[in-house]
Amino acid sequence: MTKTYSSELIFPLGKLHSHSSSIVEFPRGQLLVCWYMGSGERKADDVRIMGATKPLKGGVWSKPFVLADTPGFPDTNCVLTVNGDGRLWLFYGTQLDNNWESTLLKYKVGRKLGQWDDMGVVPLKPGDEEFPAEVRAKFPQVLAAYPELEKHRAELLAMADNKLKRRMGWMGRCKPLIEGKRMLLPLYSDGYNFSLIAITDDGGATWTCSKPLIGPGAVQPSLVRRKDGVIVAFCRNNGPAPQRMLVSESSDNGLSWTVATHHQLLNPGSSVDVLKLRDGRWLICYNDTESGRHQLALSYSEDEGKSWTKTMHLDEADIASKSYPSLMQASDGSVHVTYSFSSPNGETIRHVRLSPL
Image (tube, rainbow, N blue to C red; front, top):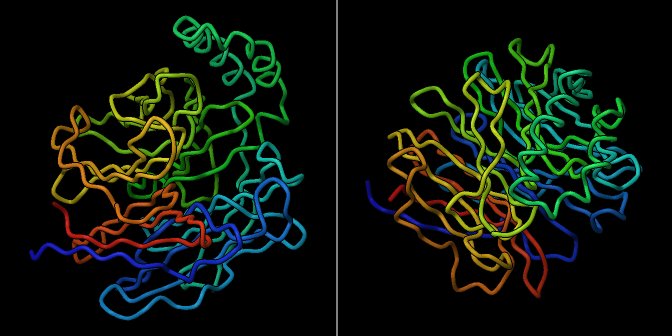
């Protein structure tokens, strides 16, 4: 295969905040990207989910169009995926009071873009006994390594005991892990500052929740399964130093998770995305810095995350904030990355196409 690399703006730089994209191939031969766009975060009610399409081979990006808009409320953190029966899913969060903790996790699903068969709220019900028990069991392990988090113990335990707080405020960021009819949708909470997996085995008709994925600020998990069956979650580090990615594992198909620990890869408090390529290698996209989002890297692993090599940087010449990547391998083998691009001249979503190294 001829090695290729191309990079382009999906739409012109603008004043509106444009962030947190997700990319899929749907239908076959067409790229679809979504992101949220509006006047700002935590203050504006005009934020909505936008989309754009482009043929996989050739062509240009369509003009942005609305994928979801709850009038009078901000819609954010959108995730696209295609499940085992070929239906397109759009997950996104609607904030009731402009704070992330008030998020309602919503969805749209259909077989044709823009023709939704169903839509609504994903009903999340973390175990009334399991959830608080897991917090009480796992958080002391975090405190043993990071005693500075002791100041959050009382608040965290009180939140764990609060039924309403357990059931709202969960948001998506990275794509679900899909295996047949089973979908594991990684979620996180800014209130709890840890993560959770929503699980369906019947195409979204019903949902269950994993035990919480707890760590020193382990949020926005991206999931990949090893050959031995263990699921690995690579998380943004929203906690104390060192500024490294946080990693957790599940040996029971995502139902329970180890306490997240620091990984070798750098992380300045920014989202990451991991992808298992068809040749078995893992590919991860992340900000490989301890501070700032000015540098976005792609690294490969040939040993299922034990080591990472062949690192390359995306669009190095551009002076901009580059963050929140979304990875996808298309039907022709090409790899696609979209990410938030914020420069002194405005914001947009950038798309990179490349052949695997």
